[in-house]
Amino acid sequence: MKNLDLLLHHPPSPLQTVEHEVFSERGLQLLVKRDDLLHPHVSGNKWRKLKHNLLEAQRLGLTRLVTFGGAYSNHLVAVAAAGLAFGFDTVGVVSGEPSSRGNTTLSFAKECRMDLVFTSRANMRDKPGPELLQLLGIETADALVLPQGGANCLALPGCRELVEETVAQLGHAPDYFIVPCGTGATLAGMHTGLSGSCQALGVAVLKGGFLQNEVEKLLAACGDKPTSNWKVLDSYHFGGYAKWTPELIGFINDFKEKTGIPLDPIYTGKAFFAAVDLAEKGFFPEGTSIVLVHTGGLQGIAGFNERFGNIVS
Image (cartoon, rainbow, N blue to C red):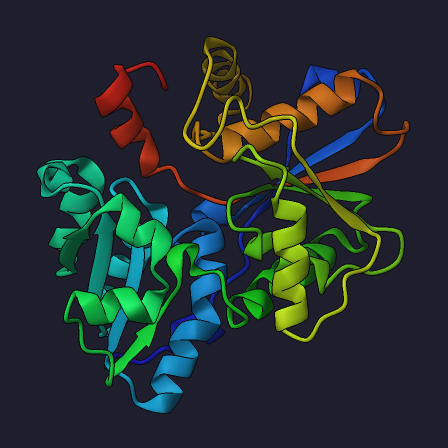
C-alpha cells in the first residue's frame, strides 16, 4: 500500500471570487470553493468523503476497497482512481447491464484496474450492501466496504474540513454555503463545521423531498444532533436525478463562458442555477457573502454528452 501522507498534507482547494452580474447588481459577494481542483480524478466531495475512509482502511491493514454505483457514477471513478493512487485493489458493483462497460466512466475505472461486477437495478435497490455482496460472491474479509456515494460516518470529517478550510481562507465564515446534494453526506459533514450565523443550503438533485430526512438520519447515526442552520432545497432537481432541461444546459454553458468555471448537469449545474435564481428573487440580503461548493463531477460531462449529444461545452 502506498503512503497516504498526501491525504493529510494536501493543499487547500482554491477559493475563487467570481464576478457575476446577478450578484454584483444586488450587492452580494460570490465565491466558489473549487474542490473540483483537489485532484484530477479523485475530485470534489469524493476526495473529502474518501479521505478518512482511506486512512481507516490503512489503519486496519485492509488492502481492498469495495463499493457500488451506477454506470456513470462519479463515486466509482473516484474510488478506482484512489485505489490506483494509494495502492488499494478495488471492486465496483455496477447497477445495470454489462453492455454499458464501454462508456467513458467505466472504461476509466477499468483503466484504474477496478474489477467491475454487474448486477440488476432491482438488486442494487432492494438488497443491503452485505447481502448483495454475498449474493455476488464478493469476499470482504480484507476490504473496506463503502456505500453507494460514499455516504457513511467516516465521510463527515472530510466535509467538515471543507468548511474550516474556507473560513481560514476567507478570514471569517461566509453567510451561506450552497452545495449540491445526492446522498446528503457532504451537507451533513459541512453542518458539523458551521458556527455562528453561517448557514448551509443543500440543493437536492433528486426529486421526492426525502433528503432533509436522510441528512438528519445520517447525522443521528453518526452521533451528531442537527441544528437549524441548514436545510435542503427541493425545487431545483429539473425532474430528478440525471434529468435536465434546455434551460439548465443553457445556464451551464453560459456560466462557463462568463466565469471560466465548468459545471456538470447532474450536480453542480443544478446547485449553481439555484444560487443564481435565489439571488434574482431577492433571497439574500444586500452584503451577503455566498460560497458555492464545486463538488467536482466533471468526468460525468463526457458520459452525458455521449448519451445526449455534445450539448455541454
